[in-house]
Image (cartoon, rainbow, N blue to C red; front, side, top):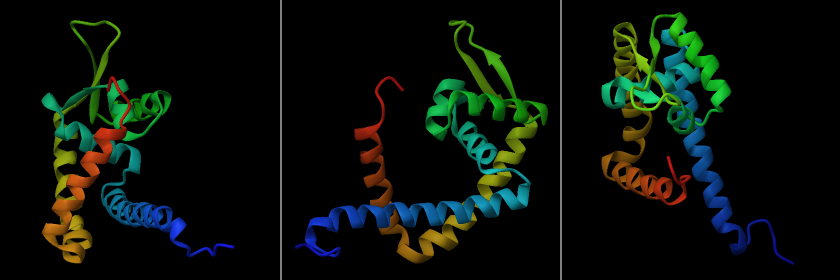
Length: 154
C-alpha cells in the first residue's frame, strides 16, 4: 500500500505547492492594491491588462479570457469601470461583432499608480524571496506553460 507521501504523488504535490505559492502571493498583492485604490480584484486586473495593451484597449472577449472571467462577468465589470469614468466601450470599425474596452485618461492614471504599487509589492514579496534569476526562470517556465495550454484562437 502506498502512503500519502509516496513518489507516485510527488508531481501532483509539487504542482499543488506551485498553485498555493502563486495564489497566496497574488492574493496578498491584489489585496494590498485593492485596499489602497478601493477597487476589487476584477477591476484591478482589467485595468492592469488594459495598461499593457496596444492603445490601452482590448476586445472584450479576449480581455475576459485573459482575466479568467466569464463574458457576463466582464460585462458587469465593464459597466462599473465605464460608470466610474475609468474606461469606455469602443466599437470595432472593421467588425461590428467586436467591442473594445478602452481606458480613459483617468483610467490610465489609476492603472499607472496601481502598477507602481504592485511592482513595489512584487519586489518585496517575490524578488526579495527568490531573487531575480529564479524569477526570470519562473516567468520563462510559466510563459511556456501558458502557451502550451492556452485555448486556440485567442
